[in-house]
Amino acid sequence: MKIHEYQARELLRSSGIPVPSGVVITGVDQAAAAFRGATEGMVSPLAVVKAQVHAGGRGKAGFVKLVRSAEEAEDAARFMLTNRMHSPQTPPEGLEVTRLLVARAADIADRAGGGKEEFYLAVTTDRATRRNVLIASREGGVEIERIAEERPEAIHKEVLHPLAGLLPFRAREAAFALGLTGKRATQAADIMVRLAKLYVELDCTLAEINPLVVTPPSAEFAEGQVLAIDAKFNFDDNGLFRQKAVSSLHDAGEENPSEARAQRFGLSYVALDGNIGCLVNGAGLAMATMDIVKLHGGEPANFLDVGGSATEEAVTEAFSIILSDDRVKGVLVNIFGGIMKCDVIAQGIINAATKHKNHDGSAGFKVPLVVRLEGTNVDQGRRLLESAKGSLPTLSAATDLADAASKVCAAVA
Image (cartoon, rainbow, N blue to C red; front, side, top):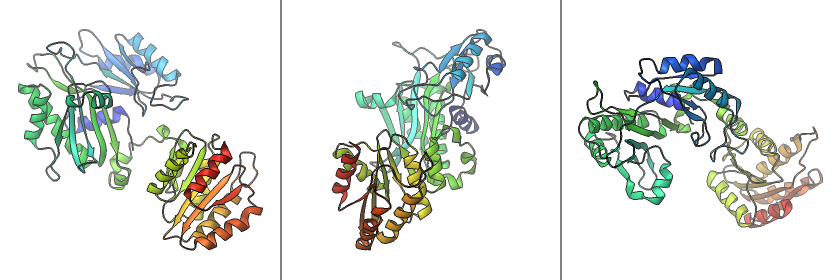
């Protein structure tokens, strides 16, 4: 599960990590007051207006703007709330923006040798070592993936202790690795420890601050203050049952409607860009199915795992979700009958396909349906599929996975 930036900033603030003040607005008429509130007390008023969507690339798309007056804040809000945001991380049709964050802009100290004192911080899980790790870099405010690929030496890592979390001396080592000294290093290390604690306590899969900045010296902070400017949190869906406060932050409007619909039926569904729908039981088998479709020249339209004990109702819903995508020109069903018997699964597929309603109100399938069954009672299941061809003329059975992929790819070519 993902949350918005303004929600992530509030999580940081509640854990004691300093964040510039800001307010969320939903209308252009609220922008002027939000600007004045965010810049109160500033000699030279400066605020930032940021679209709140679950996608990156906002700045390059024009959906993060620095504003110096209430009028500029209104203009920025009007643009963002009346245009869809397009970036490499959004669908082709873009994303509708319904919320904006108007926040106090932070003055960032200059770095010796050029540039600004901006840093990247994140806590995530290293799948190779199966341990949580803090990632830190002096290259804040940019795409960390590009830095990792082009200059991996620019990234510093500290492994979290399995029980104690990020140990303070490890956090200080990370701060020193970023080139911070004195009180700035102490502030940064404290932020790192608090971020690592949040990551574990909230069942996160990612807790990110980008950028973490240092402000110029002031009367209150002689060496400058370390601030979290932007934040991103992703949460493990499997832990949400014990994270009631986190679950309440969920914004269903930011989800793919089909993915949200699948979740209600206990289905794992991810929409892709191809034209071959895939209905599979088991995540690993689903990945293998998509791979073999690609191998035979096809393009999967989705990842869909119905699980090891899917009901007929769930299978019916799975077909409905797959075929709600107008790009789908064929469906590949790949089932391995283990706990469930193949004949039971076959009958469920037949019933679901027969009950399916098309856009024009007619019943049954209008696109090619290729079914591959293997496992317990597979012969009975295949006989059922063969006997159903009269009522389901688009249905064809496959002898193995390669045969299934070959048939469905040929059918949609």
